[in-house]
Image 1 (cartoon, rainbow, N blue to C red):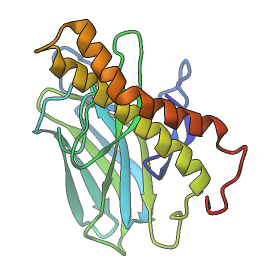
Image 2: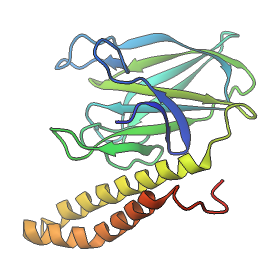
Image 3: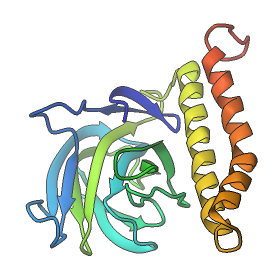
Image 4: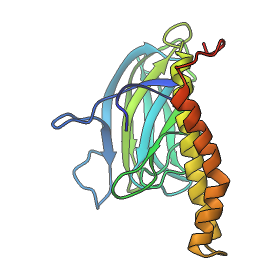
Length: 230
């Protein structure tokens, strides 16, 4: 996946490049099949006022409407606030990324094991606006493995203006990934009634024209400026 300064779902993130010897994500886990991970990570430093907090995260396996962990927001005055992490609601699995209600698929791609791996962008809005958020704790629960790849804190009047040209490119890529995900769902459902080849053809005809159109727009974007693209 892309690293460095990126924009997913209209939110700027910094993703640490995946290089040898460099830890590029915070991982918490309590899976017997994946030993060696701490169940809880404390003290992810923020020291900012926050009107919204945005998490770029994913699970090893999605389980559907099941609590898998918590983010604990710790404020300088000693107050704390809990943000539940629920599979199928604001996060889901890396290996077979599917749409959820309270988060968006931020990046969607493929590797040697799966044709549709993905990560999620989840936004929460603290109740304690105006207070300084000191740090965040990340806790994994219920035999899961949780990865945090990026964290962005935004407050009104600071860090909230996003370059719309850059955002358009990212959003177009998100729509392409959603069409691909939808195409895979159509194919898998049609295979109950049609042959594999027929299901493949129907799903391709339903989605690939839209994917191709978005890719053509992306290939020409930036060569011809649109008057209102900022």
